[in-house]
Every structure is written in C-alpha cells, then in structure tokens.
Amino acid sequence: QAILARVKQWLIGCAAWRSTPQRPAVCVCASDCCLLLSETRRNTGAVMPEATQPLVVKSNPPNWGSITEVVNAPLIDVSPDSWWISVFGMWITFPLNLIQGIFGGLCSCIFVCISIGTCCIPCSEQCCSAMGSVMAGRPLYLAWTWWRYVLAGLIALVANGASRLALFEWEWRAFGSGQWWWHGEGVWCWSYQDCTRILKSQQVRNSAFACVRACIPDLFATNILIFLSNDGNPDSQWATIRRALHEYFLNPANPSYDSRIQQLPQLIAQDWPNPKLEDMNDATLVQKLVSKCVFFVMFGKWIDNSDADILTGWRTNATFFILPRLVQRFLFNYGINKVKKLREGTVGIVEKYGLQEIFVSMNASLGKYSRTPVVKLCDEIMYVIGFAGIGGTSACVESCVCFLQNKIPKESYSAAINFGFYDTPAKMIAEYKRDPDAYIRETCRMDPPVTSATGVLKEMTTVTLAGREYMMPAGILNQYVVSMANRDPMVFPEPEVFNPNRMNLTSALTWNGAAFSGAANELEYPRICPGRYLSMDIAKVILNHALYWNTPLNDGFKAKSDTAPLCC
Image (cartoon, rainbow, N blue to C red):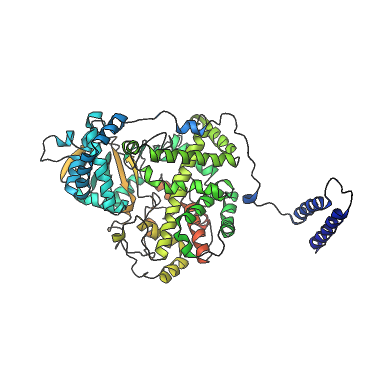
C-alpha cells in the first residue's frame, strides 16, 4: 500500500511538472522514481539478481595479452608428412588417392592393408602403411601412405552412417575382433577391463586427440588438461591446474555455486516461455540454453543470445577437432580458422563482461605453472569449459531429447539402440520423471557425449592386430574407447537395450570413470570428469522445464560431500 501511494504521488508530481510553465532543470517525476526505487530496495532488502546486474566493460589488466596473438602463434610439432609440399602432392594425386580410399573405406581387408600392411607384400608393414609411417616418425617420403589412409578413414566413417561407434566396431571387426586394433597413430582398446585399468592408473599424455597428434596452438590450445600427464605428484602441472579449476569454477560445496544452480530454472523460464518437448528438436535452442547455463554457473552472468550463438560453436564445430593437420590443410584450414574465430570470440565474451580478474587471480595461484600472458590461461580454461562443458552437455541433452521421443540421435549407431519396453514417448517420459538421473545415465551409456580418449603406452606392449603380433614401443598413442566399454556384454547384459533400471548403471564409464559409483570415485579414477555433477544438473533443469517437472538440483554432490574429496 505504501508503494502504491508513492506511485500515485509520483504520477501527480509528474503531471504537475508537465503543466509548469518554467519547469525545473531536473524532472520531479524522474527524481521521485529514483527515490521510490531506492527506498523500495532499502525497505525490502532486495538485491539486484546476479544474472541481471548491469554490464560493466573493463579494460584488460596488465600482462593480459592478445588472444589473436595466442591463436596465431608459431605452430608446434608439425610432422613432415603434413608440410604444405605434402598437401600439394595429395591434391595433384587426389583421383588416385580417392580410388584407393574408396576401396579401403568399403572393404575391411583393404583397410587393414592400408593401415598396417600385409604379410602378402614384403616390407609393406614398414614401407606401405600408416603404421609404418608412424614408426618411422611420419617422414615426408611416406606421406603418400597417409594421403590414401585419411581418405579411407573418412569414407569408412560416412559408410557407417557418420557414427563414431559404428566406425569403431567396423574397424575392430576388420582387425579380428580382438583386444586391439589400429587407427590413426596408435592402438585402440575397448573392453571394460582395459578401459577401467587405464582410467584407474596414472596416465601419460601428450598433445594428441583422436589418436593423432593435435594441431596446436591454432586448433587446440596448448597445455589444456587433456594433454597433461597425471603422475600421482600433487605438485604436477595437471594436478595444480585441476585444483584451480575446482576452486574457481567447479566447487559444488561453494554457496555461490549452489545459488547459481538453484537460479537456473527461473532463468531458463524467462528465456523459454511455454515450452514443449518438440521445441528441443531445434538443436540450436538446446545449445544456446546449455551455453547460457554453463556460463552462468561459472561466472554469474546470464549472457545474451548473440554471445550464446558464439558459444554454441563448441558443439557445432565438433567435426573439426578430430581431423589431423594434413586434412585440415587439404581443406585450406577451413576448420582451423573457424575454431580460431571461436576461441577469439569466447575470450571476447570474458572480456566483454569484465571477468579478466578471475583469470589473473587464478594465474597467480599456479606458481611456476603460471601463463604469460594471462590470456593464455583464459584461453586454456575456456577451451575446456567450451569443449567439454558446453559441447559435451549439449550432446547429452540432445540425446535425451531424442530418446524421450523414441528417436535415434543424429550420428548415432542405430543398429545398436533398442528402446525395448520403452517403445512410446509416454513410457519414456514417465520413466524420466520416475528417476531423471538414471534416465540420463542410461541414455549416455548408450550414446556417450565423449566416445574415447587418447593416452600413451607407458611400456613396450605386445599387441595382436589382424592375427599378427607386434611389439609396440613405449610412447605410441593408445586410445581407450568408452563408448564400447559401456557396451561390453561381460558387464552390461543386453547392452543394446535401453534399461534405466540396470543394477550396475553407475558403473558406466561415460564421464571418464564410474562417475556416480560411490564416495571414493575421485580417488579411484584420477581423471574423472570434474564437471560431471554440473553436466547432470544442467541436463535435468533443461529437460525438467520442457516436461513441466521439478527435481532437486546439486543434490548428487551433497549426498557424498562428507566423504568424497573435492579434487583428486
């Protein structure tokens, strides 16, 4: 009533001001309005919500640096067979390479021959195969083996419906359906036992992705967490940066973190009124919402649609991350240039919202691992947040949306997905509402956002490929395939059947370890996804809004916080 009376007084004053021949320099209504608002805030104790605080653009702090200079720094570790002269050779011999690639991508025995050679041709393993090139250090004189090999791999991917899981299983069968197969620059393993052994160990890593050396610093940022080794030393670079990541961004026990998580339903409702599940068939809507949620939980800023459009690039550009430099250059660096623009735009959002001091403080906490200039650290952290946080969570939500409608997600292995009892959307939705956590976990077991990860063999290892034994030296890349481990029939009976009621569902390795299997999972799986709780909460809050449902948020961590370590 007091506020209404004050508004009435304001309107009377405004009318009087307009009728005054000699108006005062300051409008009475304007000053009254400001006074009313300030008194209301004082009387009610209201505080402007964190997400709607005005934008304050700050100049970059000293030693911040330029993100443009970072992404355009001199290239690192470019193999001779990826030099421009090799790219030129690949172009002028393209028809011949394409013919070989078509045969290799469609015929498994030819693919094996192109990959590792054949016993039918003397010295083919050393002189005519991708594996022989890797063992020799990928020299320029063996570049031709990669020209046909990369085309064979791309054609095999397309032939398998652009599904990575389908491609992995095709290659696995081509090499004899055993423990190992060859792809890229290393050996791959798939069983639950092998993947668990690697995930529970201290891993040696280098700058490699999808089992090929990574394009740095233009496509990938240098020294991001996935490239750093964890050797058990609490003072290692990996451990230091991971602790800082938890402390500054991923501490579920922090009151501000919890407060931001609890605000997400209201913020999403403002952006997406009158929701329908079918709305989420528009992947852009999903990706924007995920981008906004991730950025808000990390920084307390609910970004606008133009900024969200930029961040959705971490999902839409996923195809380019798996391509080796030879292919990137063959495509005139189209993909690399898109990702460079994405990285510049992402750091630009940090600068736009005046968040640089967070990274200045974080950089100072790293001691001998601090970055110069500071924008390098910002780029590395935002790369992880964008690549894993936004890209991975978007993939998770997109898969859940498809499953809820009894649809096969795009680029998924349709032959390996059977909805079983849940053969109607009504049954799917009812099951989600019964236990959202189990529903999301089972969906991601069958269609994981991250299918595999790259490590390094720590010692000489004997592997069998296509019936022949090879001695792989220490240092050769080793890819472990989570998407196949989650379908190991020795662990998950009827792995192709959707069943959120599996007794051992928490044993799935989707988040780089058995993420929700107990209080000690951080100690058991040193490289377990640090943002797994956040990913689950964002998926739930978006799906809940579409289904007009409500579940507790940030409760998964709280249930274990008394005994689980914050960071390994």
